[in-house]
Length: 595
Image 1 (cartoon, helix red, strand yellow):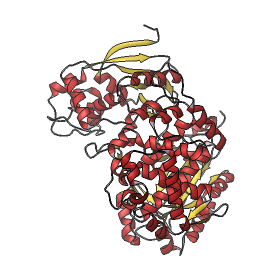
Image 2 (spheres, one colour):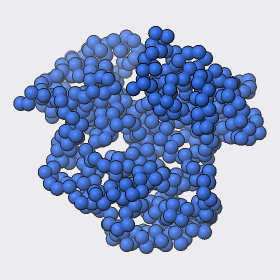
Image 3 (tube, rainbow, N blue to C red):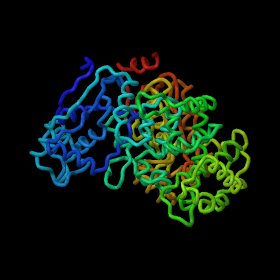
Image 4 (cartoon, rainbow, N blue to C red):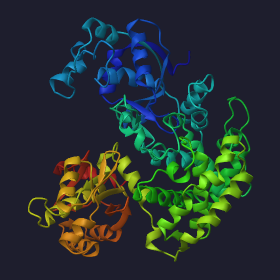
């Protein structure tokens, strides 16, 4: 056995103690989302109760945030099944885990961090679970490339992962990063590459029986619009669709929309010792020619236009495109509609000007132009191109030329969604305010505006050029959203667990319009007790007012390269709070900016 590899039996309660200390991390560059159903979780716990053997867990010691963590190479679903059962997230047939049988859970119960749920499983069975020896292989010196290759080889045999997950696992290049990033933004499970296992449930997709998962499957764009099913999302078909769309956007020589084409783009070969397919070079070269940033901007712009129209008109994509059939999987239809919009908005530099006319033209277009080809499974790139051209001919009269630097083209729909979803696991870089007037008195709250600036300085002081945002016009508190609705007689829009109220109603009532409302906030910002003054100017230069789901949102951004003082003190962000730095630790803040 190599010197840097250990294999041993570790008790469940020992691993839970490490979990409680936030030692386990998930590398989302190659690891899939939490995907087990409640039945799969219960079956695994039953295996432990029966004392049957379980597969080996593979971990690697890595340095993360100046600490040694355990990166999970294989066993994430199983570890989550154990830890979420222990933490009362679900029950077995006879009850919930007894928190009193392990020291760590007993302490959490006493501190009311976790509440014991009823009925309680027999303590003898719970002790058997706590004392069960899990087989663990731990590597002490693997580098990132070796970890990713190990993950891919483990999952290449059998059907542990979907085909798309196997392509993505360990894939290196701009194309896989672009596809996975866009897919995560649309689903809402956005995060940094490295995420604590403790936080994975927050960005995992739930069905009706796993309520502790943070993302509602039925609110995801693809499922809500009957473009894809839950099963499709679980198998990462959304990433396959985005990969095909990106290839359509950037490749001159088209390929058919099949598994072989995707394998070539990802450089994937089911034989780990086989050669890398040549298509990867082609698609990476195309990305280099155009740039990742431009491709992402183009994709976001087109996607946002489609999503915004459907949301504003409360329409489902499938119900708009098809009138004669009841389809639940319409990704090919979305592909051609997307490419028609892309042709008009990107290649021809146009924008939508008549939404009602456009929707009328699209109404039932799938029955006429798409349906027969889908059912016969005769889809190829030639048919795809002909269909796109037919759709363009049908809808182009509802688009007009876009002037250079048209503010309406500076679309923030996807950016705001990304900010909301990232805030779930990275609270210290984001904050949200529903407005700047007191609900009870109706008076303008200038101290609240100054508190927003204090929050931005605290985010800034986390490190050089730290990007953070405060958005005004939304909240994650339903009661506040209901109060706003009652006061301004305007409904809010729900996006996952966020409530979008916008500032337009408040602005119209209090100042007359959004421009005057924004001017009042700017005047308050200018008076904020902040040093250096150049920081305030950078905040003012970055203030934006943008549409999001038909609501006006104010966006304040921080991105600076030196420490910032607020009212004679330094603040730092800790979770969702801005806390003053102790004077004896001021030097630590300054040291961050000198690295």
